[in-house]
Length: 367
Image 1 (spheres, helix red, strand yellow):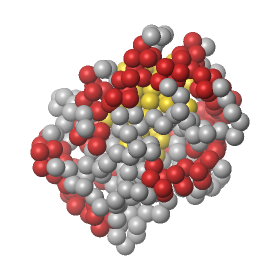
Image 2 (cartoon, one colour):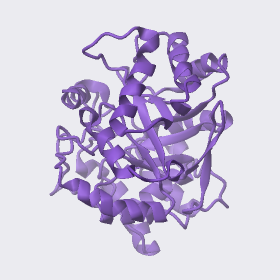
Image 3 (cartoon, one colour):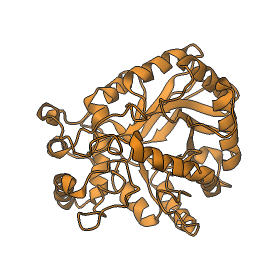
């Protein structure tokens, strides 16, 4: 099962804090703790805030936050239970009323079950009332597919699971595809030309890889809409290595996943109550991230906000559109609490000073 393959891969080193990588946290260098915000200080993220996803046949106006659906249907990592879908249905109106109508999924999440649940969640809704984002899985498949046709074949399978005619955003899930950038670009172009996706993006690409694929896609008149990488107070690598700035310079949205460190930045987990061992992104020992938690708690108390809201607002201040998972109405409320206000520059720099830079990997997380 693919979800178990993912878990094994993360354990071996696809995650920058697992497997062949040292788990010792590397604090952000002193020179980096004075970077501060990467978005204009007069920008206040709100439910009505919209970012631009560029497409060949038209652009998409998307919210400043994105809902991650990796946990939906996944039993290997997140211990999903079918009855939790009812809780998702209760969370959806809260998200919609807060302008957060953008869902991120992938065929390898729960062996396709995440995509099926996404389809069930939006069934019957006007197609322009939500934004759906899925990915081309670059992991090997049981049935061989001609390299150029792989993105198209797999997107059609995703659409069938979601019972949709098209997705709004289609990402290359990782930079380890055996196909050349030119072959990948040609396959993605077919998806756009057949109106099966409105925009194209990438995930886990570093700056150089992103630019190389962008140049290949440009031959077909297709821009890269976004790049999705792990980014939070526990992994500032995309910021410190210039990826976020490169995205801003090229009109590419930077999207952060594991924006809350898989729950480590919410207050749910402590040294006495650590997260499950399967939560492998940002997988530091809880005692090593206590300074980050304390800073979030201090700012949250002063602001009357949850730790999660402060951590998500921090990502937005850094120029990221956070992808954040949820499985309940309570989590939905906590997430949207990040909107309607903004951290001061002093607060951002206070968090910078306790943040971790993180690492990249050769196996998956290049960006």
